[in-house]
Image 1: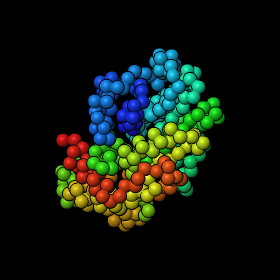
Image 2: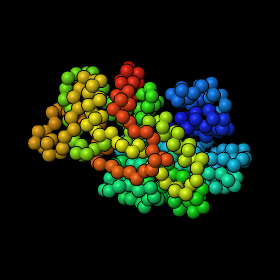
Image 3: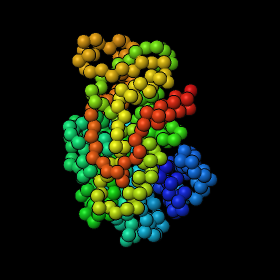
Image 4: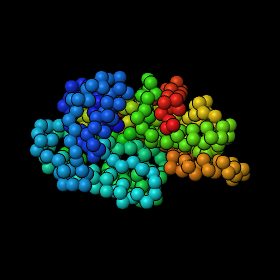
Amino acid sequence: MASHVISALVARGDTVTALARADGEVVRRKVADALTTLHLNPALVEKVQVSSFSLAEPDLGISAADVFAEPCTYWHSAALITFFPRREAELHAVNVVGSANAVAAFTGHAKPGSRYVHVSTAYQHGTTEGRAFEQWPDYGHPSEFRNDYEHSKRVAEVELSQTGLAQRGDVLVARLGVMVGHSGTGRALTDLGMYDFLRVIALFARRTPGERVRFVCHPRAALHLTPVDGTVDRLLALADGPFDRPVRHLVPPTAVPVTDLFAAISAHLPVELVAVTAAEVEAEPFSRFEAIVNMRCKFTSPYLRHEYGFESHADAEPPPVTPRILDLLISWYTREGLPE
């Protein structure tokens, strides 16, 4: 999201300083790709100032007097995203401690009139039953989440809610859905979320075409696939508006049923994906092939086993992923995005 937000900001004439852990050339390449994805001039990347920073250092290891010389909007989107086990300490260091360090640097140096935008995930709701509301969360036990990433994002929000920024109303928490590519072209710059699942399915489908693979799914399972172009538009509008409602869900009004996702994937890859219940698998156990595919998808498949409901409002909702857009997203990735 950071590269796409930077692209939209610089395209409208804003002065942008990108604080990055990566090398400057890597940042510029990512922003240039994002500009292209959003149908903007990639040469605009030359207007982006890049500065190295560290989430672990006091004042983020930057020249705070220079970065915060004028009132600004500070976008905190730096995060570690991994669903692998035994990464809890690293996730906490980046997503929780790093977020707290960013708040401290902003609070200590930002000029009056500055604003803070914290990019989070709607799935910080974890596996808690019921609808997720646009409100500050409470602490949750790690067992209430599918992975340590979700838990770390929840803790970061809880700690942010207890800061002076939150008390003064100078902060916006933007909770994103499952980020996907451009709604008009299908082009994507990520291998996370739906694309991680697609990559695994494609690997097995092309090696052993014509197989059937079942996944245990909630009967009403659906994913809030969120196109990057519409999400950037909503983000910028919210960041420019009043922060009277500090927590917002940037999810489409209609989620994509998992059965529709499976059908679209099966239309582009030589595989039949089938949503089943746990009882059906108990009655007819997975074949060896199905068991292997499910094991390789073990970090994505838990998101198929729950029904999600997020409070959202029209001013924050990106346009929904229609069947046409879904087909476009999958066809582009299977044609252009898959690794060789």
